[in-house]
Image (cartoon, rainbow, N blue to C red; front, side, top):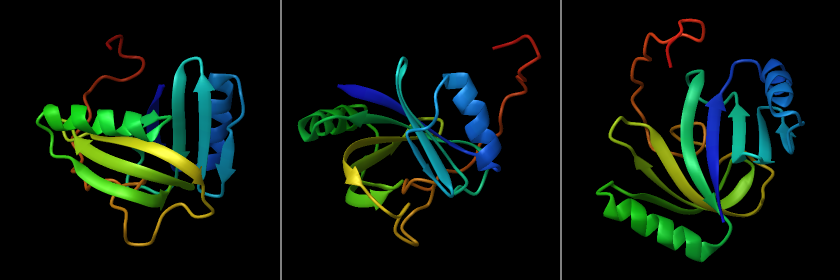
Length: 153
């Protein structure tokens, strides 16, 4: 089964943990000094925040799978979408041992496809990462003028 993954970079981890815990109605399933993660079933999402990225805001999306064969199928879907697949293979990232691949959507938003095998004690290997979570380098695009109280979106 697949689970949507969202990773957001924050500037204040404690305040963000408080906010998202209230929003989701539950505490994170994993908390480190620079990272927190909620594994939610309703909606089925792996939601993570960290202070690791260069800019605050959306870092990347992903699809987490439960089995290696699901990852193979997802990688094939990414290849068929004419997206340049960046295969990272097995690595330690986001306090987990995972097998990962990445693509950039037409707007430059990073998407990862991954299978987590085990927990890890480190966030990532030094100098291996270009986003908060071992992903490809992404050039920031300006946000729209749509603000929470603007009545749009």
